[in-house]
Each structure stands twice: as C-alpha cells, then as structure tokens.
Image 1 (cartoon, helix red, strand yellow):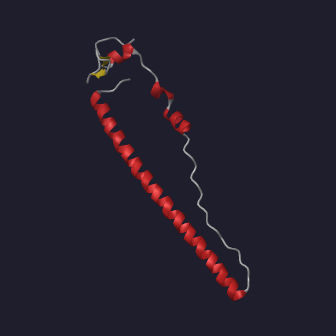
Image 2 (image 1 turned 30 degrees about the horizontal axis):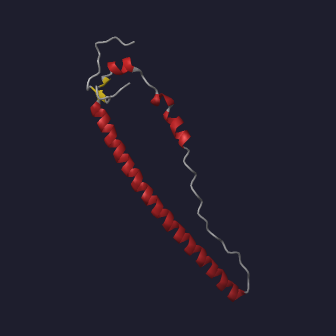
Image 3 (image 1 turned 180 degrees about the vertical axis):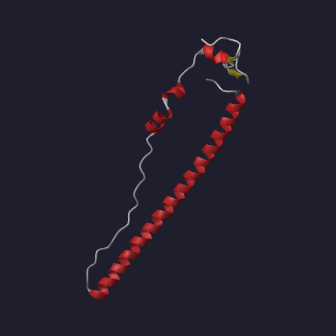
Length: 123
C-alpha cells in the first residue's frame, strides 16, 4: 500500500532524525570504548604495581589479575532484515499504485496524490 506524500515527508524527517541520533550514539560509543580501554590499562598497571610491592614486602608471589574488554557481538544485518519481514519490499503493481495515487510523469519521476483513488474497484 502506498502512502500520502505528507506522510512520506514526515517519515523522511524521522529517518533523518534517527540517522543523526545513530551517528551521535556511535561517536559516544567510540569515546566510551576509548575511555574503557584507558581505564582497563590503568587498572592492570596498578594491579601489577601492587603485586610487585606485596612481593617486595612479603616475598610471596601472588597472581596478578588482568582485566580485558570483551568485544560486543557483531550486528547480524540478515537477521534484522528478516525480522522486518520480506513483505516490506514487495511490489504492489501499477494498477494498485494508481489506485493509491501514485503515478509517473513524463519526465519519469514518481508523482504522489494526497488522496488515493477510491472510485475504482480494487482488483
């Protein structure tokens, strides 16, 4: 089913907003990964220094714990597309498009009417 041009414009605006939000969140995630890596390195260094001091004082070899960042699982794009449903990409056909107010002009671009054609019988 086709949508009205005004609704398409609203969806495009929402898409732009969501892409901007995703970009900002991606940059923030990169900053957090960098900060986390720095803090992990500092904690590991402090643990080593602590173990050296304990060994110097007590003459005991204690194990040195080491933190490591666990990578996040990769996003499976195929799973995302299958969750969206394949009907999202099905072509309704020219007759149904005309009934919904979508036509082609002489220049070859798509034209949308605000109101679908309800006078024709659906086929």
